[in-house]
Structure formats: C-alpha cells, structure tokens
Image (cartoon, rainbow, N blue to C red; front, side):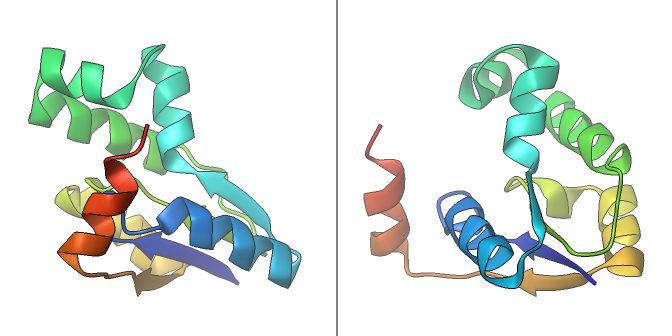
Length: 113
C-alpha cells in the first residue's frame, strides 16, 4: 500500500507522514525535499522568482518521477493538487488522505523558521 498525504502548506504533511511511516514500518518521501534538490535552493525563493506555474511544474515532475513502491508514505507539496497528471498517478497508485487544520494552527506552524 502507498499512502499519499495532501493539504495546504503548514498543515503537517511532512510531520505526520514521518510519524505514520515510522509507525507502519514504511519508507517516507517528502516531495518538498525532492523539489529543493531539483532547484538547488529554497521553495519560496523559487516560487518568488519563477512564479506559480513553474513551481507547479517542478512539483509535478518530482511526483511523476517518484519510484512508487509498496509500503511508502508520500508527503506532497502544497501545490500537488494543481497538477492533473500528478494527482491522476497518485490516485491510481495510492490512497490519498487530505490533511486539514484551522488557519490559526497553520499560521503558528509556518510563522516559525
């Protein structure tokens, strides 16, 4: 089984994904980390410089190039849902779980460096 976590930035996909993977004995993939490796820098800097479309494309490419294996938890970036191709492959190959939280909680998480 492959489990994919989606949700907006700051909702806890990476944190929960790591905990879930450890609990289940699964491998863990953080798409944000893959994107950072591809762009050689920080996500927000790339987004500010290149714009939404370029960022969504980089995330889409990272997801489409994942080596999807059984017993894996994937934490997508917050923009994954904007890629039809990425969401199609994830929905075919994995169980998708939407994480949600209140704005005040998310704000607390993303306001700390």
